[in-house]
Image (cartoon, rainbow, N blue to C red; front, top):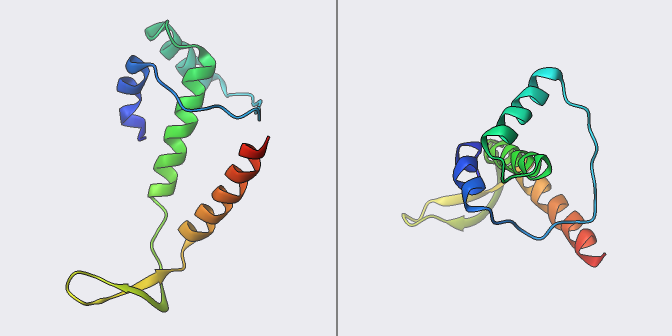
Length: 108
C-alpha cells in the first residue's frame, strides 16, 4: 500500500493479522504533531493503528523504489523473446530475509 492510499484504507478500517512483536520509538516533535493531527482527523483510528499503517505504507514505498540491477544469469525470456536477467540488486535479498522473518514470526 502506498502512503497516498492510506486515507482510503483508514476509512475502510480493515487490517491484516498482527504479530506479537512490539516496537517502541520516540518521534521528533513535528512527526508527533502530525500523528496527533491524523488522530484528530480520524477519531475512529487509534494512534497505534495510524502508526502501523504509516510504517506499512513507508515500507511498501521504500521496497518499490529498490533498483533492478541485472546480473549475468538469464532467468527467463520476455514476450518478445529477449532475455530477462536475474536481479542482483537489493530486492531479492530483502524478499528472502522478509520470508525468513515472516516464517519465524508465524511460528509463534
